[in-house]
Image (cartoon, rainbow, N blue to C red; front, side, top):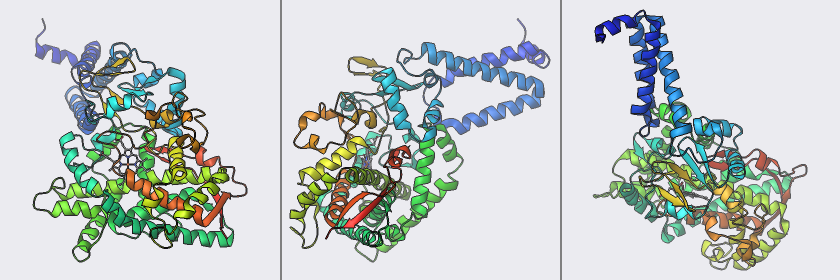
Length: 551
Ligand code: HEM
């Protein structure tokens, strides 16, 4: 047997030995490292190690041997990964497109037109109810999977299941991205204090103020006979509302009629995430390099807003969501907000959670109501008797929450145009899970996407049609109630659900009470769908609507 020094000496000039050594190393690095565990967050180290190895080989052996070694290493590494994913991976028997089985890059390919939710829906039609959408990821179209994956007793977890690992502020995860269940429980308690009935009642005054600002804009547009882009204004309404009830801050974008820098950044960042189609390592790489660009600017603006809010709170009594975080942070024994990074992290989550989600429902509610004007009149008839019932000249959330058609219109909109189209992924426990009689192995990312589930024929009769009566007088049009989960379920369900419903009820009621509306001349209503973007949270395309003040 040749000695090691002799072998190394041969590597200098023996090309076949260089190829063999590179290929062996490539194969071993796959079988000993890459095939085990989750490496997206280690992307920077992986790249640096590869770069350092190539540089050292070049210095030691020269450029051509180093290139031969590296090339054969990479070819062997990717061949080994591909063969494994196709023929040996625990998910090899699950159907799905071939490129999805081979590489996560299939995600950005599917998302290239911003309509990942539609593309994934098509995959279900082609491949069945459980499909392999990435090498280690399954999408499941089965409502029974919701409790299996999301209930408190489920063994499924967020860690390594998607973008959660990389969503943090200087290492502090927000409520949605926390990977540890115990930590999540404590933080959730503080968030829930900020969403209790008593807290919502204090925010409601601000919600009404925002509604009146919106109505003032409608007055201007209707007086001038101008059409309004309801998708844009839905975003401005919810953004201004979030500023007010989140941070007691006035953004005044409704009056301006356009996005401000912060909202713009929010949209750009979501757009970039949407384009990645659930690919995590580019985000991890950006984070490791230090958030610059838009993400860095967004973080800085959020921090400034949070700091200003904290400073104001020393002299004023302010009722807002951030106040609940501050209260915990400033207490002697904080339950969850132990340091400033956590404060900033969850401040950003208020911005993210409370803006686009509600905006998309409002946008599509305006669309459906403009298309089906009879529902505007029915809603008008329903809300009119409760106007001024509790507060003179105003609506209140508690009065509106009892109105069946209003609730049905909101539900039906969220069914058809589910804001969180894909829902977050979860990692299966080591023992795996069983869904619809099919065993899914452990260590696999799974998710039940809401968009195709809400439009499934197995769950809803005439699933593509807007029929609010399915939630009231025609329950037979719902075949599977468990298939409707816009806010998801379990311990990580939407903590802002009641707040979202309050905003939707109030904005829609004030609008139909004051106005009748229809699609603008020349508007065929197609762009709201064709130009919609699935940016983790759905974003509606534009819609031109004309409003006429009721006499
Ligand atoms: C119609 C509007 C909304 C919809 C459809 C919606 C939907 C959802 C969904 C599906 C989740 C679960 C995500 C996952 O784990 O995969 C979620 C979580 C969350 N939502 Fe909402 N949301 C809405 C409004 C809001 C509002 C107004 C807030 C207020 C800030 C908010 C804050 C949150 C937070 C903090 C979480 C994480 C909860 C946790 O992990 O415990 N959401 N939302």
